[in-house]
Amino acid sequence: LCCMGVKHGDRQGMLGSLLYDAAKTNNIRFLTGCKVTKVLFQNENKTRKRAIGVQAELNSSLKHTIFPNFEKSNFKDFKKVDSKKLEIKSKVVICACGSLNSPLLLQRSGLENPWIGKNLRLHPVTGAYAEFMDEIKCY
Image (cartoon, rainbow, N blue to C red; front, side, top):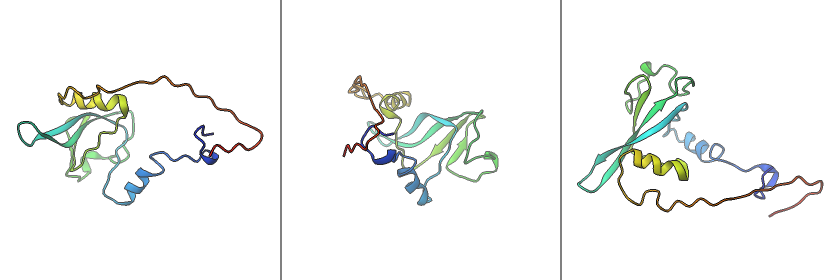
């Protein structure tokens, strides 16, 4: 059940919408079983940095869907740093770690902007839902 008024609980998340569309373009690679630990930057001038990739930590207990045999892969934009770390270079880097983890990732990556994470507000929320015998339309 979806408590947001979506018919039949058919609410689409990222997997069913945006990631599926991105995968059809063949311009994206998915890597599971890893955690981004740092955004890699290149200095453009004294005051401006540009994101050029990420550093990720591999979870050895998980199977990596894109690299069952990493050493045999020929992806030029992937570089294995050591047995657990991987660097991935990219023209575009999107930081989408959620409202709590995005500021942490940016700060851990060395960005020193005093406004990173300053406007975070946590709002206590209580949710309630029920299942009715009769059809209830919330839309």
